[in-house]
Amino acid sequence: MAISSSAFPKALVLAGVLLAGCAGEGNESLFTTGSLNSTPAATAPEPKVDPVCVTLVSRIDGLRKEGIADKIEKAAIKKYRLTNSDLAKADQLTKASAELQLRCTTITPASAQPAPAPVQKTTMRAADPLMSQPQ
Image (cartoon, rainbow, N blue to C red):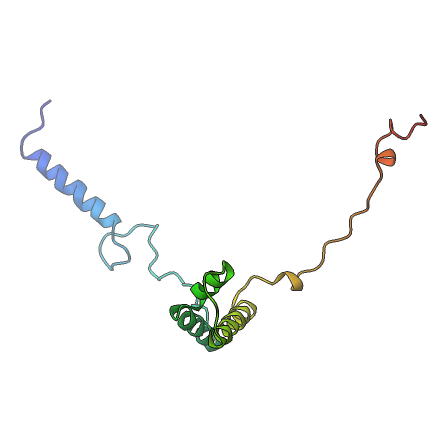
């Protein structure tokens, strides 16, 4: 049985309309599906940014733009001699970085983590039954 030339375009248009109903994305249209919610999903609230953290980041960025980090690296390989003002800025950079890590990161420093339990040391003779026999 052959498909008439006018039936194929009609079927194609009908399939397109049915598929378009599935792509409604919350529109108040005639076509809806069960997978689309009529209410928008609750989004997680944006975390509040501490103004102190913003200040610290801007201070660190300013010192890095001045080239303090590069000067410290060059001084470490003895290609540059730090002046007193460079040393003061390097100190500010170090302190600001440490304060940023303490206040603004979720990773706890190693000193705040509990110390691991001490490991008992055993001798080879006690651990190996073959070695514990008299020779």
